[in-house]
Amino acid sequence: MTDSSVPAGGPEDVTVTAALAMLEAGRYEEAETALRTLAAAAPARDAGPRSLMGRLLLQRGAWADALPWLEQARHAAPADDEIAFELGWCLFKLDRPAEAAAVLEPIQARPDAALLLGRAWLEAGRAAEALAPLEACGLPAAELPAGWCHYVAGRPAAAAACWERWMRAGAADWGTKDALATFLFLLGGGPRPSGRPERPAEPLRDMDLWFRLLVRYGRWDDVEAAIARGPALDQTIWRDLRSRWATTLKKAGRPAEASRLLDDEA
Image 1 (cartoon, rainbow, N blue to C red):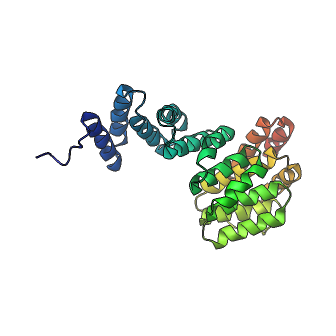
Image 2 (image 1 turned 60 degrees about the vertical axis):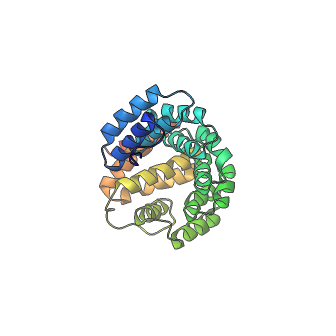
Image 3 (image 1 turned 180 degrees about the vertical axis):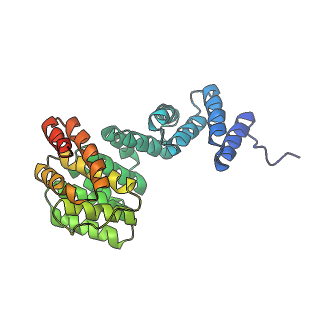
Protein backbone atom coordinates (compact mmCIF):
# COMPACT_ATOMS: atom_id res chain seq x y z
CA MET A 1 0.00 0.00 0.00
CA THR A 2 1.42 3.38 -0.99
CA ASP A 3 0.95 6.85 0.42
CA SER A 4 -1.35 8.62 -2.05
CA SER A 5 0.15 12.00 -1.09
CA VAL A 6 3.49 11.00 -2.61
CA PRO A 7 3.57 10.91 -6.43
CA ALA A 8 4.85 7.73 -8.01
CA GLY A 9 7.43 9.55 -10.10
CA GLY A 10 10.03 9.74 -7.35
CA PRO A 11 11.76 12.42 -5.28
CA GLU A 12 11.87 15.03 -8.05
CA ASP A 13 8.09 14.83 -8.43
CA VAL A 14 7.72 15.27 -4.69
CA THR A 15 9.83 18.43 -4.94
CA VAL A 16 7.72 19.79 -7.78
CA THR A 17 4.56 18.94 -5.88
CA ALA A 18 5.91 20.63 -2.77
CA ALA A 19 6.85 23.73 -4.76
CA LEU A 20 3.40 23.89 -6.30
CA ALA A 21 1.86 23.58 -2.83
CA MET A 22 4.04 26.47 -1.66
CA LEU A 23 2.82 28.57 -4.60
CA GLU A 24 -0.79 27.74 -3.78
CA ALA A 25 -0.17 28.81 -0.17
CA GLY A 26 1.47 32.08 -1.25
CA ARG A 27 4.90 31.00 0.03
CA TYR A 28 6.65 32.38 -3.03
CA GLU A 29 10.18 32.69 -1.67
CA GLU A 30 10.20 29.07 -0.51
CA ALA A 31 8.75 27.95 -3.84
CA GLU A 32 11.41 29.87 -5.74
CA THR A 33 14.21 28.31 -3.68
CA ALA A 34 12.80 24.81 -4.24
CA LEU A 35 12.36 25.33 -7.97
CA ARG A 36 15.82 26.86 -8.44
CA THR A 37 17.35 23.83 -6.74
CA LEU A 38 15.31 21.40 -8.78
CA ALA A 39 15.90 23.20 -12.09
CA ALA A 40 19.64 23.40 -11.52
CA ALA A 41 19.80 19.65 -10.92
CA ALA A 42 17.39 18.61 -13.68
CA PRO A 43 18.74 17.20 -16.97
CA ALA A 44 18.64 19.56 -19.94
CA ARG A 45 15.74 17.63 -21.49
CA ASP A 46 13.52 18.24 -18.45
CA ALA A 47 11.34 21.27 -19.17
CA GLY A 48 9.08 20.96 -16.12
CA PRO A 49 11.03 22.68 -13.33
CA ARG A 50 12.40 25.31 -15.71
CA SER A 51 8.92 26.11 -16.95
CA LEU A 52 7.59 26.37 -13.40
CA MET A 53 10.47 28.61 -12.41
CA GLY A 54 9.78 30.88 -15.37
CA ARG A 55 6.07 30.93 -14.58
CA LEU A 56 6.73 31.92 -10.98
CA LEU A 57 8.91 34.81 -12.08
CA LEU A 58 6.30 35.88 -14.64
CA GLN A 59 3.69 36.01 -11.90
CA ARG A 60 6.00 38.30 -9.94
CA GLY A 61 6.57 40.56 -12.95
CA ALA A 62 10.27 39.65 -13.06
CA TRP A 63 10.30 39.46 -16.86
CA ALA A 64 14.07 39.60 -17.39
CA ASP A 65 14.69 36.92 -14.74
CA ALA A 66 11.99 34.67 -16.21
CA LEU A 67 13.34 34.81 -19.76
CA PRO A 68 16.33 32.40 -19.53
CA TRP A 69 14.26 29.81 -17.66
CA LEU A 70 11.52 29.91 -20.28
CA GLU A 71 14.05 29.78 -23.12
CA GLN A 72 15.61 26.67 -21.55
CA ALA A 73 12.17 25.12 -21.08
CA ARG A 74 11.25 25.74 -24.70
CA HIS A 75 14.53 24.25 -25.87
CA ALA A 76 13.72 21.16 -23.84
CA ALA A 77 10.09 20.98 -25.04
CA PRO A 78 9.75 22.84 -28.35
CA ALA A 79 6.31 21.35 -29.03
CA ASP A 80 4.78 22.53 -25.74
CA ASP A 81 2.48 25.40 -26.71
CA GLU A 82 1.95 26.54 -23.12
CA ILE A 83 5.69 27.10 -22.69
CA ALA A 84 5.76 28.89 -26.07
CA PHE A 85 2.91 31.14 -25.00
CA GLU A 86 4.61 32.04 -21.73
CA LEU A 87 7.87 32.76 -23.55
CA GLY A 88 6.01 34.95 -26.05
CA TRP A 89 4.32 36.82 -23.22
CA CYS A 90 7.67 37.34 -21.48
CA LEU A 91 9.28 38.74 -24.64
CA PHE A 92 6.26 40.97 -25.22
CA LYS A 93 6.54 42.39 -21.69
CA LEU A 94 10.25 43.00 -22.26
CA ASP A 95 9.32 45.22 -25.25
CA ARG A 96 10.67 42.72 -27.77
CA PRO A 97 7.48 42.34 -29.83
CA ALA A 98 9.03 41.03 -33.05
CA GLU A 99 10.73 38.20 -31.14
CA ALA A 100 7.49 37.52 -29.28
CA ALA A 101 5.63 37.27 -32.59
CA ALA A 102 8.13 34.75 -33.95
CA VAL A 103 7.50 32.51 -30.94
CA LEU A 104 3.71 32.92 -31.09
CA GLU A 105 3.12 32.43 -34.81
CA PRO A 106 3.36 28.62 -34.72
CA ILE A 107 0.72 28.41 -31.97
CA GLN A 108 -1.71 31.06 -33.23
CA ALA A 109 -4.50 28.47 -33.50
CA ARG A 110 -4.87 29.15 -29.76
CA PRO A 111 -7.13 32.20 -29.40
CA ASP A 112 -5.05 33.68 -26.57
CA ALA A 113 -1.87 33.25 -28.62
CA ALA A 114 -3.51 34.85 -31.68
CA LEU A 115 -4.57 37.83 -29.56
CA LEU A 116 -1.06 38.26 -28.18
CA LEU A 117 0.45 37.77 -31.64
CA GLY A 118 -1.72 40.58 -33.00
CA ARG A 119 -0.71 42.86 -30.16
CA ALA A 120 2.95 42.01 -30.74
CA TRP A 121 2.79 42.79 -34.46
CA LEU A 122 0.95 46.05 -33.72
CA GLU A 123 3.64 47.17 -31.29
CA ALA A 124 6.38 46.04 -33.66
CA GLY A 125 5.12 48.51 -36.26
CA ARG A 126 3.39 45.93 -38.46
CA ALA A 127 -0.28 46.78 -38.00
CA ALA A 128 -1.29 45.30 -41.36
CA GLU A 129 -0.04 41.87 -40.25
CA ALA A 130 -1.57 42.27 -36.80
CA LEU A 131 -5.15 42.43 -38.07
CA ALA A 132 -5.35 38.85 -39.36
CA PRO A 133 -4.71 37.07 -36.03
CA LEU A 134 -6.78 39.63 -34.14
CA GLU A 135 -9.77 39.08 -36.41
CA ALA A 136 -9.32 35.31 -36.42
CA CYS A 137 -9.00 34.76 -32.67
CA GLY A 138 -12.66 35.37 -31.94
CA LEU A 139 -12.03 37.02 -28.58
CA PRO A 140 -13.90 40.26 -27.79
CA ALA A 141 -10.73 41.68 -26.22
CA ALA A 142 -9.12 41.67 -29.68
CA GLU A 143 -11.35 44.54 -30.79
CA LEU A 144 -9.31 47.08 -28.79
CA PRO A 145 -5.94 46.42 -30.51
CA ALA A 146 -7.75 45.83 -33.83
CA GLY A 147 -9.15 49.33 -33.52
CA TRP A 148 -5.65 50.72 -33.13
CA CYS A 149 -4.53 48.77 -36.21
CA HIS A 150 -7.19 50.61 -38.18
CA TYR A 151 -6.49 53.96 -36.53
CA VAL A 152 -2.77 54.06 -37.26
CA ALA A 153 -3.54 53.03 -40.86
CA GLY A 154 -5.79 56.09 -41.26
CA ARG A 155 -9.16 54.36 -40.91
CA PRO A 156 -10.77 56.11 -37.92
CA ALA A 157 -14.31 54.94 -38.74
CA ALA A 158 -13.22 51.30 -38.73
CA ALA A 159 -11.33 51.93 -35.48
CA ALA A 160 -14.42 53.43 -33.86
CA ALA A 161 -16.50 50.41 -34.95
CA CYS A 162 -14.01 48.04 -33.32
CA TRP A 163 -13.97 50.01 -30.10
CA GLU A 164 -17.78 50.13 -30.02
CA ARG A 165 -17.93 46.34 -30.36
CA TRP A 166 -15.28 46.00 -27.67
CA MET A 167 -17.34 48.04 -25.23
CA ARG A 168 -20.65 46.37 -26.10
CA ALA A 169 -19.17 42.89 -25.69
CA GLY A 170 -18.27 43.61 -22.09
CA ALA A 171 -14.60 42.92 -22.81
CA ALA A 172 -13.50 46.21 -21.31
CA ASP A 173 -13.02 47.04 -17.66
CA TRP A 174 -14.06 50.52 -16.63
CA GLY A 175 -10.48 51.65 -16.15
CA THR A 176 -9.57 50.90 -19.76
CA LYS A 177 -12.86 52.36 -21.03
CA ASP A 178 -12.11 55.59 -19.19
CA ALA A 179 -8.55 55.60 -20.51
CA LEU A 180 -9.77 55.22 -24.11
CA ALA A 181 -12.37 57.96 -23.64
CA THR A 182 -9.67 60.25 -22.24
CA PHE A 183 -7.26 59.49 -25.06
CA LEU A 184 -9.94 60.12 -27.68
CA PHE A 185 -10.51 63.50 -26.05
CA LEU A 186 -6.79 64.20 -26.42
CA LEU A 187 -7.04 63.31 -30.10
CA GLY A 188 -10.01 65.67 -30.50
CA GLY A 189 -12.70 63.03 -30.86
CA GLY A 190 -14.53 62.97 -27.56
CA PRO A 191 -15.83 64.98 -24.60
CA ARG A 192 -13.49 66.38 -21.99
CA PRO A 193 -13.05 63.89 -19.11
CA SER A 194 -14.14 64.96 -15.65
CA GLY A 195 -12.30 64.24 -12.45
CA ARG A 196 -9.42 61.91 -11.71
CA PRO A 197 -9.55 58.13 -12.23
CA GLU A 198 -9.81 56.00 -9.10
CA ARG A 199 -6.71 53.98 -10.07
CA PRO A 200 -4.56 56.33 -12.17
CA ALA A 201 -1.78 53.80 -12.81
CA GLU A 202 -3.97 51.83 -15.25
CA PRO A 203 -5.04 54.67 -17.57
CA LEU A 204 -1.52 56.08 -17.45
CA ARG A 205 -0.17 52.74 -18.65
CA ASP A 206 -2.75 52.50 -21.43
CA MET A 207 -2.35 56.08 -22.64
CA ASP A 208 1.42 55.72 -22.61
CA LEU A 209 1.10 52.63 -24.84
CA TRP A 210 -1.25 54.37 -27.28
CA PHE A 211 1.00 57.42 -27.45
CA ARG A 212 3.92 55.11 -28.31
CA LEU A 213 1.83 53.66 -31.14
CA LEU A 214 1.19 57.15 -32.54
CA VAL A 215 4.92 57.86 -32.48
CA ARG A 216 5.86 54.46 -33.91
CA TYR A 217 3.52 54.90 -36.86
CA GLY A 218 4.45 58.53 -37.46
CA ARG A 219 1.06 59.99 -36.55
CA TRP A 220 2.62 63.35 -35.74
CA ASP A 221 -0.57 65.42 -36.09
CA ASP A 222 -2.15 63.17 -33.47
CA VAL A 223 0.94 63.46 -31.27
CA GLU A 224 0.72 67.24 -31.42
CA ALA A 225 -3.02 67.18 -30.73
CA ALA A 226 -2.58 64.95 -27.67
CA ILE A 227 0.17 67.16 -26.29
CA ALA A 228 -1.84 70.34 -26.93
CA ARG A 229 -4.91 69.03 -25.07
CA GLY A 230 -2.97 67.36 -22.27
CA PRO A 231 -3.07 70.35 -19.87
CA ALA A 232 -6.87 70.00 -19.74
CA LEU A 233 -6.48 66.73 -17.84
CA ASP A 234 -6.17 66.37 -14.10
CA GLN A 235 -2.78 67.93 -13.36
CA THR A 236 -1.43 64.92 -11.47
CA ILE A 237 -2.27 62.69 -14.45
CA TRP A 238 -0.85 65.17 -16.95
CA ARG A 239 2.41 65.58 -15.04
CA ASP A 240 3.05 61.84 -15.15
CA LEU A 241 1.92 61.47 -18.77
CA ARG A 242 4.12 64.35 -19.87
CA SER A 243 7.17 62.68 -18.34
CA ARG A 244 6.38 59.33 -19.96
CA TRP A 245 5.68 60.86 -23.34
CA ALA A 246 8.89 62.89 -23.24
CA THR A 247 10.82 59.65 -22.70
CA THR A 248 9.04 58.09 -25.69
CA LEU A 249 9.88 61.07 -27.89
CA LYS A 250 13.55 60.97 -26.85
CA LYS A 251 13.77 57.26 -27.70
CA ALA A 252 12.17 58.00 -31.07
CA GLY A 253 14.89 60.52 -31.89
CA ARG A 254 12.71 63.60 -31.28
CA PRO A 255 14.64 65.38 -28.50
CA ALA A 256 13.36 68.84 -29.43
CA GLU A 257 9.73 67.80 -29.00
CA ALA A 258 10.60 66.04 -25.75
CA SER A 259 12.34 69.13 -24.36
CA ARG A 260 9.46 71.37 -25.39
CA LEU A 261 7.01 69.04 -23.66
CA LEU A 262 9.01 69.12 -20.41
CA ASP A 263 9.62 72.86 -20.67
CA ASP A 264 5.88 73.46 -20.60
CA GLU A 265 5.95 72.47 -16.93
CA ALA A 266 8.36 75.23 -16.01
